[in-house]
Image 1 (cartoon, rainbow, N blue to C red):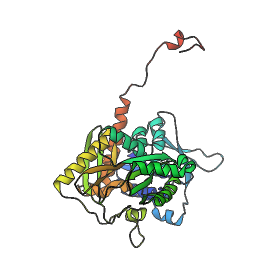
Image 2: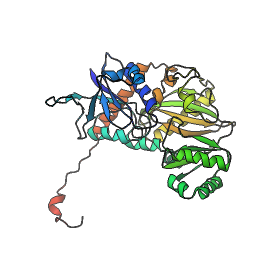
Image 3: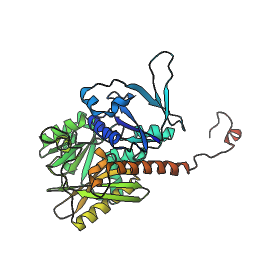
Image 4: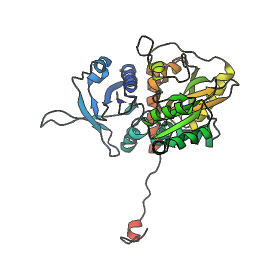
Length: 381
C-alpha cells in the first residue's frame, strides 16, 4: 500500500479553496490502494498533520485535536515525512512517502515554490515541474510564451506596482495608449477571480489597478473580447501524450466570473461539489477548443491535470485566456463527463507523477572530471 500525502492550505488568498480541494482528494483517494496522510499548511506557512485534517467539519469549527507539526527533508533521496511528537524524550515519527498529491492553490504552492521541495528531495508529486508551474502562474510570462508560439491571446500589457504608485497618471495613460476599453485589470499571479475588475473609464481603471496592486507586484491589463463565450477544457498527461475532457461554457458568468460565482451558490453553500454544467456538444467548437488546449498544455511542458480557459468571440475566433495548472477540485466535473470517477482521476494523476519521476531518474546529472587537480586554488576558472 502506497503512502500518499495530500498537501493543501497555504499562505495564498486562495487558502479556503485549497482546503476544499485537499479534503476532496483525501475523501476520494482509494483507501484500498493508498494510506492517505493529510498535510495542512496554515496561513502562516507552517505544516501540520493528523487525522483531524481529514474531516472538513474540523475546519468549520477550527478544532484540530490531534494536530502535530511536520516537515519534509531537503536532501535528495529523503522521501520521509517527519512528524513531531510532543515530549522531551519522544522521537519524531518517520513515514516514507510514495507520492504527494498537490491541493495548494495560488502563491507559494501552485507557483513552483512548494514543488521545489519535492524536486529537491525526489518525492514524486502531481502536477507540473517548478518551471511549468511558475510560468503557468504568471499570466504575463505565460502570455509571452504563448505569443512566441503563435497561440492566440487577447491584447494585453502590464506594469510593475511600483510604477503605478510613483506615476499613477502616466501609468494609466500608458495602458490606455496600448488598449481600448473595456479593460480587464488583474493581479499577474492570482487565481479564483480574486482582485479582478473591469474598467470602462480612466477613473475605473485607476480604482481597478489599486485593487489589483494590493494582491501582486505586477498587474496585467487585458483588452476585453466583446460578447465573449468562455470555454473550459481540461488536459491530462505528459510529454505530448495527453487526453482531453469535455468542453464546458460556465453558467452564470457575467463580465467577471467572480469568486462567489465560482464557489458559492445562492444559498451560500459551496458549488465545488456537484452543480449544473453547460457542456458544449457542437463538434467544430469542441475540436477547435480541445486542439488549442492541448497545444497550450504541451507548449509549457505541463504534466498532470490542468484546465485551459478559452475565450471565443462572436465570429468563432478563440483566444487562450490562461492555463490553470491546479484547477479547483482537479476539474473533476469536466472529467466526469468523459467517464472518470474521482477515484480514477486521482489514480491517473498519481500514475503520471510516478512515471515522470522514473523518467527523471534516467537523466544523467553527473559529469565526473579531474578539474580540481588541474585548477590552481584561487585561479580564475
